[in-house]
Length: 154
Image (tube, rainbow, N blue to C red; front, side):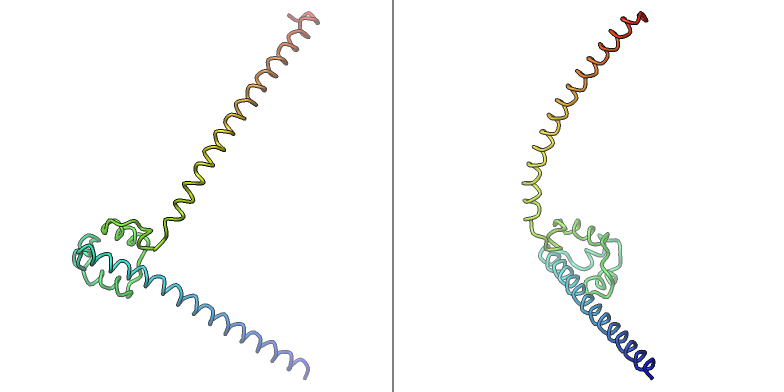
């Protein structure tokens, strides 16, 4: 009897975990779909603003107008390769279609100056260490030569 109750409790826990997993997975899928819809919406607005028709885009992508229409309606998945091509055709940076702000680029540029300085410092420190190693090598060679001379090998 105790075993049956434990098995039922265990089964219920498993079912609850599966239910919550499926619920979470559905929520993630909806969030991903919303992001894709935003990107497609941005493509459509940029395309119309630039005066391109569905047919123009289809021709540039070397697909049929119906196939391109399916991309814009979400019936066909938008691939990364196709997204790059669309950005190139529309002559807009990919970051515009993905709505990525330029703040990241500014931060990277500011960091680049710091990294360049660190590289210059590293080079200078390496140059000094290299000089010291060469000096030490010369001293060791002199010492070895003097030992050889004392023992009569030279």
